[in-house]
Image (spheres, rainbow, N blue to C red):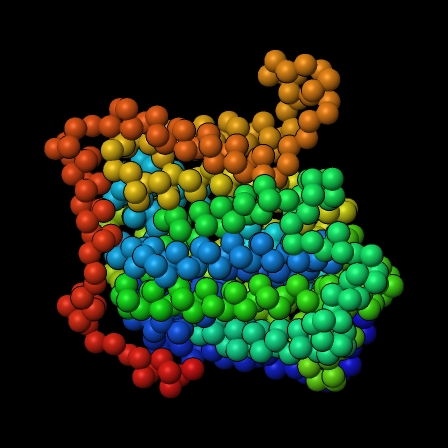
Length: 536
């Protein structure tokens, strides 16, 4: 889809703007606490907008758009799960996550499960986050090259370098500021696009009339029967999606979203902002793909994309937006990926500096480093990690087809949920041994390997006929992993040590600290709310 030169000026202007943000917020980072968690001085609106923007990637406007194009309103359940997750953060989990009083979530894991489990998560997270960021960057490159005709390598390199420039320079402050500014672009623009779609269709009433006229009423039901879409988008699928997002948003590995906010009260406000914005998104983000299906199906199917439906959001937007705003659709898709990538990059480097480096230095008998040196190490490692992400994304781009990308997505799904389950349960169940999380992960991984790698059920004693007919659905995979992971965690409680043992005392101290409100003036000091607002 060809766009004019003025749109390129819009895109370039946007990229220059967020690079400038990195340099503007460099002065905010005087030590590693500032660089990795904003010195715990972030205002609720700044932290909340950053948490919102980092909660989704370009997949929202590509993969999720493809789901909405095919199944209509069922796509809303994906975002309703996010709304539920953030709303529970607002009710009580947001303050709990902030009140852990740490810089990285492996530090919180050490206080709950001990150093062995902390080491496992720390060493696991670094390569996995690199992999996820590279996949997101690669997916963005594929989409932009197929839909807009951009060179995939240029997209990967330019976006990667821009994220590196502001993330390495300004740290967490720059990440939050750019996310806020990206949100100021993305939210109003997607509202405009949704309004233009309804206008083109003649209003909400005509939308449903057109769906009925084109014979899409059954396919576009919010909850589908098991006979459609291979069993997807049913009540089982919807409940699995909602439960999955709830766990993802409320476990300990979601805590970095709130480490930067001032206190538990501000964390609640930030979570409520996220919940409201995500609810707004869930009500409007599915409209352009549906509009593309009803008004521009030939344009969508003509797109040179592996799954043309995934270009439906871009097709509807470009077809309806006036000159000058089309470039902002590219910006919105870029910002969705860059906002999740910069947060992951900053979190990753924090783990390297706070969790891995001290142990490596101790083994090598190195001397403790001053804060200024650690801050410089953080900036250097940000560049190193960023270049690794870009190189890995470029490697994916050189492969024939998307086979490697599909495999990596499958492996990512395999590894994500099993390690998340104990990080949720561990905040509620105290009576566990130190190895409870590792036991839970082992049980969940055992099941997920059967499901995701499609191990023949005949190997498990089932009949040949049953095995040939059975295929793992998403909800069966999810609830199987959830059930086995929970079972592994609960069975470990049988071996919980006595109340007065060092491990139980450590766990009790962790839970108490997590539920104790923060006194900002005593624990942090003076705020800089006005300075943040002025800089933005």
